Length: 342
Ligand code: F6P
Image 1 (cartoon, rainbow, N blue to C red):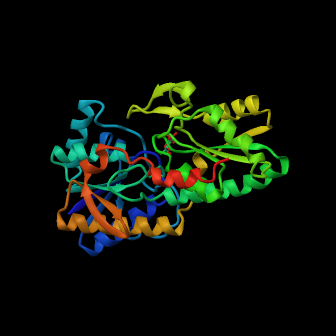
Image 2: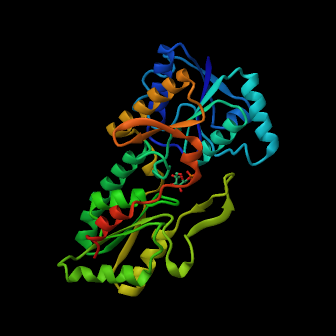
Image 3: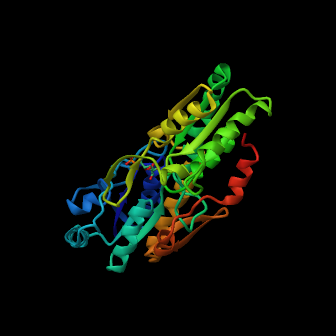
């Protein structure tokens, strides 16, 4: 069986660990592998590479993806969808392991309905895919946010300032909540809960009562101030999956906090630092377990499904279940974070 492997959407620490595990386990099971370059783009304009034990050796700790990635959406144009289906046949691919977030796996679900044997592996630093407790890449992103908050803590305290830290999280605030709790944030703002700027200022001013002289505010990029009626965006342009480019909440909020509280305020945008570089040990292990399971599912003919973590067990769920709705922040977790606000 010749199995295609592709990585789509934003890159994420642990992608190479999945590729390595799929290939190593799959070869033990008698499968052959073809790497598809740059996500779905490599099937619209065919671009592939042979994946052997040798090709995947040494990539476990390497960030990014050896296959390249893109946000190409072959469902946007029916002609591209047909091209992909024809190219899968022309390249002799019997099945495809699709490593991606809701966009990439949404395409995998639709292609499965069209007769292509797809298997999904849940990737995103945002941790917003349903059906799995965690996606790989999230733990690395949280570690980087925690590291950044620890460093910002000392400079913010020395100057008795307010520091607003903008983190990733388009529709879900998982990174903000986990990173914020681990780094001791005084306020955490997430897309799931539109916020009132005056309330944030009240939390910041409340620090005096708590005997504190500085404040760390963590805002997910998708967090929306009620007065702005939506998230702050960089421009109006949409990508192939209809997403707008977010960014600017940190700068906006820092300006408003300084104006309204008269406290000296700075902001930092962590941006792609959260996505680059080597995965944590946790993500390497999760990605490896996901990859092994994906290879075994191919061998067992379990297509149209996504590998998933439930509790500490690796299971599989339907691709349609995983992609039909986003997994937003658990409000019980947010309430734990709120105990430390102010
Ligand atoms: O989907 C993951 C993610 O990192 C989001 O948190 C963020 O909004 C987006 O990707 C950024 O995408 P790009 O790298 O294309 O700017």
